[in-house]
Length: 470
Ligand code: BG6
Image 1: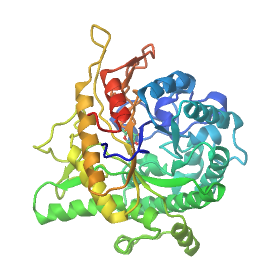
Image 2 (image 1 turned 180 degrees about the vertical axis):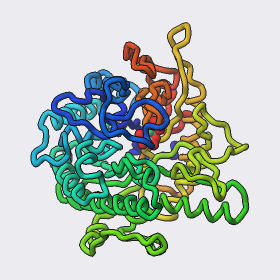
Image 3 (image 1 turned 90 degrees about the vertical axis):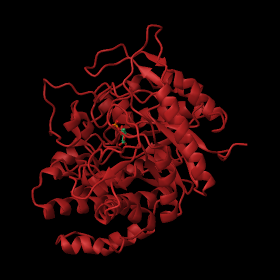
Image 4 (image 1 turned 180 degrees about the horizontal axis):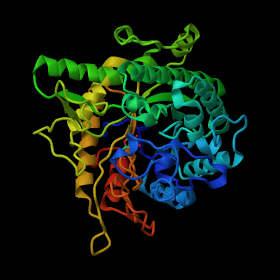
């Protein structure tokens, strides 16, 4: 007998900007993701405008904007029960601050969700996935500006009213806890260049606060529109281990983890945690946090915790902190193998994290991203036999099953990138996560043809057996 509940949501996840392309079609405005080139620097240093001689991988991506019907047919064949994607905010409000939405953008998501539903696949929506309209960045400075609370409110009101009969599960901000290290999150593109630590932290915490208020308003309004709506937060929660038993490594790793969980603490518990005051005092932060904001945060707690999990990392005291898990990849873990991008493969860490989060929050969890990026080419028979991906999937499903036995309430599991898409971190097409190969290269060449990999039938069998046949 399967250990997974009957209604477990097996699925796949993408983000609009990494798949759709059609970057200016049907009235869409530019988003912050549309100005990112290829390369590891792209998420650290964000230029504010397009340049003629640069290739932008997200502009066409895998052309999901035009090919979604055939792709969804493949997802249905795979047996997906749900499909997570984001709504590109700038399709609905091209600049972000308009009074009226763009009807053509709204129609696109109507058609997309209708197609999913017709195929028996439940749409799951990320409201903002690294896709803030560029105009809100250039004109308002991104989320450090309270004005964005109102623009987000208008946007969420429109999409809740339009899609609440089609969508039940929503997430307010993708990987919000990356606000410290990825300028994309708070759409504060200069944040990493601010030399004064005090000013930098002020921007980060002010922007985070504004996002907390916006997220809570979305929870409150979304439930008013339809009380069935389930509105979650979304954090990047691959874990961090201390590199040694040196108490300094242990405590610094704990503090780093708490810097991430801070976001869950506010969004799920509805108040700032007690440790926050010391951060404010010691860094002399002057933040605009109003009493009415705190009331909103208290009333708009998220229904569940969505999170991404890919790997673990090791932190040693004094290491330069680049990611939310310490050094970007952390110290090398001698017990773990890595993929080509240096991401350690650690299925037991998924069970560990599910338990950690259940103990801390006692709310439903939704594993909305998990997967492995591999470099792959079609072989002489035109196939890809991706044993490594099947092995990764098998071990992570086993870990999830153990976590359920441990008592964790897990709503579902959406594999990251069931079809190859543009990498968020590097802009590469050739960092492939899919069960479906897309013929497209890093330089934008390729026919865009779709080919099922060996893992396609494997995941199909996992879903069909509700996690039994591994
Ligand atoms: C998560 C993001 O951080 O990781 C996704 O939510 C991203 O947008 C995924 O694609 C995998 O990272 P990458 O850099 O391999 O695409």
